[in-house]
Picture 1 (cartoon, helix red, strand yellow):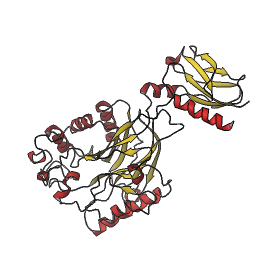
Picture 2 (cartoon, one colour):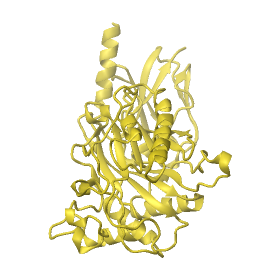
Picture 3 (spheres, one colour):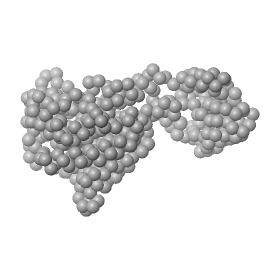
Picture 4 (cartoon, one colour):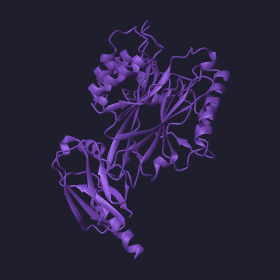
Length: 424
């Protein structure tokens, strides 16, 4: 009997979900170059609007954000240039420098499309210089209650400059991150976006991230591990510097380093519930031309006829920052809630999911007035129909229902059914 009930429950859930559908998400990490305090290039917000309008990321990870004013300005840009459902994580100033007088005003931040992702937790891992900001996200799928797809997103900015001492400081920062990651289940999906300031893959910090004995082992989805600094053979993954001209802020010298990365946990290259899309890793604005080495990204050396990135894109990138953004795609085998579903699900929640005689709803949205409700048992049989009246609260009499699991559905609305248990 128990097996039959479980079988009916699974069958019923499949009626309301489309597990064969695939959704793809676009991710971008970008060093914002001391935004908004760096003012050498006027009105550079317009360049960022152009960049984001062109790429349309679903997750936007940033570093070198100076203050809350800048954070809110970026949020407004994402809402206007990408989609109005964009939100940001809680703005938090760097805590790692508290003992040295708060001298470091380079913050990390996450912006995300709230129609596609739910922010569940925000974690700070301090180091001797800058925080690792970690965000736990859940994908907003139709079956998120029974089959949640979760992703930890790390945004970071390691110590800059070459030399043994700076390499050691980068390594020590990564060790602090690994200490936190060791507390997570080893199968956790983790994505790391950051300005790592690495000159070669042999640096201790990078080797620590890729160490296969770690609880969470990262991998370079671009598969371009090597000695990349000032090496034209790695020009396709170079991210700095976009400039040769002085007086614009940031670093000059032209295109010669791979400092910016998006790494994924190893399981995201395989058969987890959210995966890296093969060959999707790109440095946005980088046409991969060896002639671009040591040149400004908006120069004629950085494009030929048929190149992916136009002069308009490369010029906006040149003006906004001395770094290029890094991008990749992630995919899931599930369906997202539509925006209507998101609104309805937020506005129609029971007071309790374990009920005795009455299932109560409070603060019902007026858009649901006069809607029909249908209650099913675990076998999919209709056991009760109710009509919502023009009132903000309702109590549904469940006294005649037998103890067990039930599902309530808004009739003619593509919304995940609400589960509740009757226990007299």
